[in-house]
Image 1 (cartoon, rainbow, N blue to C red):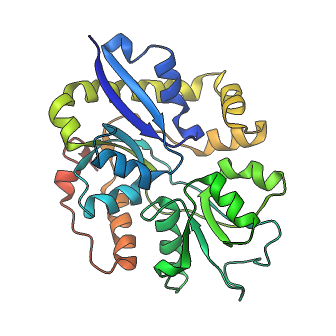
Image 2: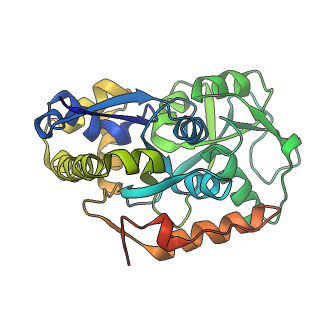
Length: 288
């Protein structure tokens, strides 16, 4: 009988190598039944799912995972998934009076949920601009679709989300792109609950080896651009840009400097400091 491992990720193009490996039976060939669930609510929804045992593994934004561990999440990094930083687009509604983060119009920020990447990135970017955001500045909209509705109605005026997944809404005239932001750390980590690691550590490690191999082959796969276009409504030009800019991690190393950068940024926006034992958090990794 195959070992069942439940994994969650956002419904975005980053995760296609894993989806295709599942469909191709690559995990099953190693005795692993990797069961995938999409979480439109993003990192905040997945950290809760990890904590409640709904899933064993989650593909999380670095800053969201570090924040969740500091808040008590019992989980570890088992692999860096995407090495390159995430490019966040900054959006407003097509009919919004807001034209810039720096203009004087009142602004409310749409976020998928508290503790999510859209929440933390808005706060980190505001701190860099010398601004302080409070809980009252945010409105929880659950998902990208919820944000589009909220921005269109001008209930909120600012929204941070991955650039390529939102571009089609700019092209359609529903949203306006008013800026971009990237943080200096790896974008996505694959994380495992402590419970899952205690029960299935060897199977999880094998699954990570399969993901390393799938990520390497995906870049060279001539069918990958067509699959990205078909499944995620990206155009040819955007697919080429994304593939060229995205670097997958294909080993078990992690850059300590990137984690330090994330912790430093979070410390500037949190009322209490982040205290994490890096060696414990990355006990399955090679720090470099």
